[in-house]
Image (cartoon, rainbow, N blue to C red):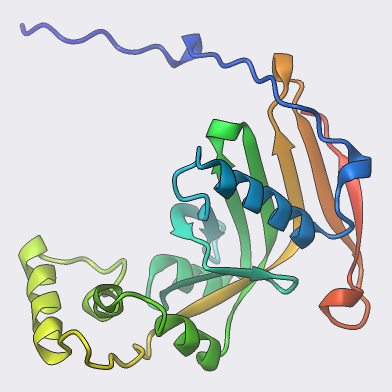
Length: 227
């Protein structure tokens, strides 16, 4: 019988958060403005690797959930945008069930942002504009990977990429893959979570309270949640 390393006990792992409280009176009127404030602050500190990394959770028509980490690439008053292969699992699930949750896990600064809403494809012009900003290798990667499909080996994937490199060498314009594009998540709720002492965390959630004329006309209320 071989010796094994003792199992690490997660129950013994504890962190005491000592962050400043979130005061409702200091919040922006609109959640996307508040998100911009926090996102800018977190990025400026440099403590969080890839602060635009978010956990995207979807569910199929039967309610079976799945989650994965995706990079946020755009945000404005209309919502949060990410890009993917439209044949991927998340895209297929969003086609069946548009409800989605986003989680920004900024653990080093004891903050989280949790979004719930609905996702819809963005226009091809928007997709093309973003695609042109991607590095050449990433553009080819979007073609080489049939995302979420079973692949026989790493060699098969590398061979597909090598073929694309030969077809579209650096400097050659790469067309936008027809099955690749963006989703915009239109928020219904946006929760700002700040870790506090003794697990008495601050949780302030924006809830859409009414519809006006366009994104600027949306009305929101803020509610404090028990931790």
